[in-house]
Image (cartoon, rainbow, N blue to C red; front, side):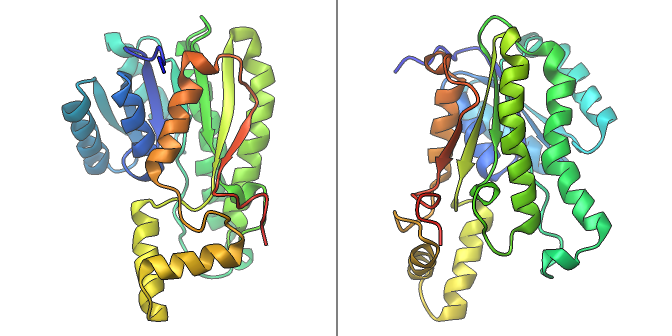
Length: 269
């Protein structure tokens, strides 16, 4: 399939690891130049260097706190000074805040609640706002939001994650209408369980706690949760969908919220 993506440019939040890095790698494999946003200067620089070396594209790691408007403005200014990023074709909103406490999320402090919302929901809006003047309006402009399945179905104990994901899913439809006159499409990828670095460690710990292998523990969890395919998604499976949504082949798709969840949402328990 010809994607038409070679030499386009993308800004990806949460791009130093996990789903964000996987999407960056998938886009880079199609010849897209990528700018990665993440808080850790070391992690985002290493990720960008790896991608540039492997795929031969321009990859820039920008240490950026997306809860800070000034930091995003500075990132936009830096990219405007680079020929490959004067026009941005693809924005991927993937960043999400870490779980800061293992307590039930209903008893979290106001600061913990607002911090989570500030990263995922408001952070996504900030990124779109600050890069909108650079976003392509020739029909190649794309916004891709990553919003987990907990925004559609209850997944204990993910209270704040669910609230954030539901908000991003709503914003996807709103922005699809808002940006349509600029010929920009806006879509959401809705992952279920994904085998990120964090989830792989989590699965290993879960198996050890139960006296099982990680694969056995995940298989049983998937059965209990109603995940029909009985496994976690590979990160590359999310990246592949992002490539399609970013490509010329998806130019008539906007406002879509597409699950990549192994059948969880049709069978949630």
